[in-house]
Length: 106
Image (cartoon, rainbow, N blue to C red; front, side, top):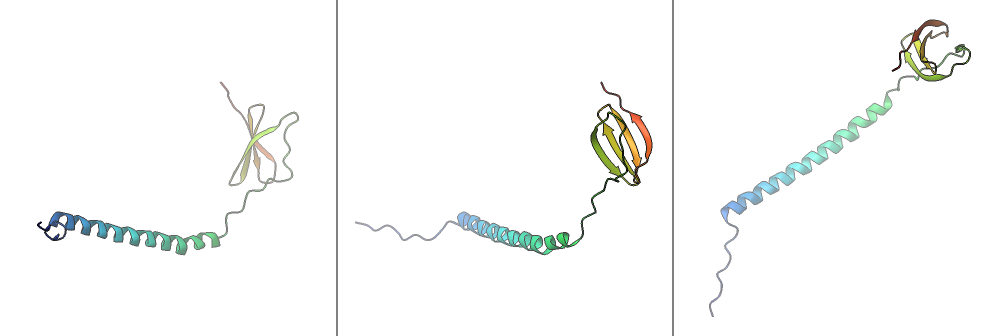
């Protein structure tokens, strides 16, 4: 009986493909380590800065009789309150009514 010839190794095209896969694996490992390092070093800085103060409603705002607030929004120097009767009331930050806008509905 004849013995099978000893394997000579991988063909050249498969050796090239193996090298490419190893290079891709090393690149991916370096990329994951880099992303983790950036997240770990940059994230604590975002938590150190103080968040913007939440807007406060003044205690002096009074809505017209028979209305309920549906939504409120805050701007620089004003507060807008949308009521259930389709009006938008614009108040100053001190609580005085500045403007009233009637909203059209369809």
